[in-house]
Image 1 (tube, rainbow, N blue to C red):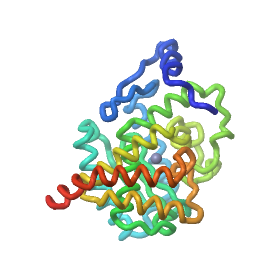
Image 2: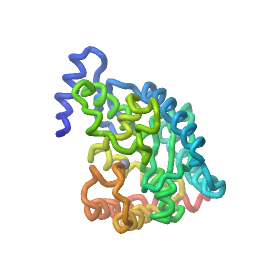
Image 3: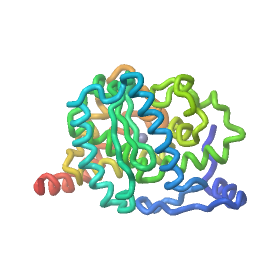
Length: 270
Ligand SMILES: [Zn+2]
């Protein structure tokens, strides 16, 4: 399905008399927001706790304490920078878990609820700098309100939306096995791919956040090279709406050059 033109979407939202378009504080881009960040965070919180409980019951939650500690150490540093870039996110209840799912994926819901899959850690074997790039990219989607934006689209298109079109694994979980999650707008939005525009925004903000946190921006390039070569790395988040990997790696090189001075300054402070 073609993405509706923004003007049309805004008009449709305006005529629904429910909301209008909001300007994102980081990018300055106008976003059609039928669902606010706060609403997105609230439903994400619900979906996240169900998912975490389900993973716990299946013994798929944080099975390796050392891995969890490593992931937390990296996300803590990036979250600290995220809170500087968008101060109201200090109120978010940031949380990260490692889920035992054999898929190359990671995500951050609205409100700062994050997960990284063992499939990513095992198949990509990221260095700390590379894992920081993954998490900073995901955190950027949340900072940039991409989930609320997608939830707005879900709400708008809901009547015409065929669940089958977007079914499949949320995050590697079979929806039929995770009772009650299927009709959550937060969950639906998480399964929808981000637009290319949203992906480019998350790439640019992510590499900047990671650099400010003292992680090498050149790792975004090596991460993508690994993603490209990894078998089974075709997860919805990472490949579906992105430009070709070659184009993306070229864009990453430019961003890496741009943020090297930021990284070098951050490294000196540490
Ligand atoms: Zn993304």
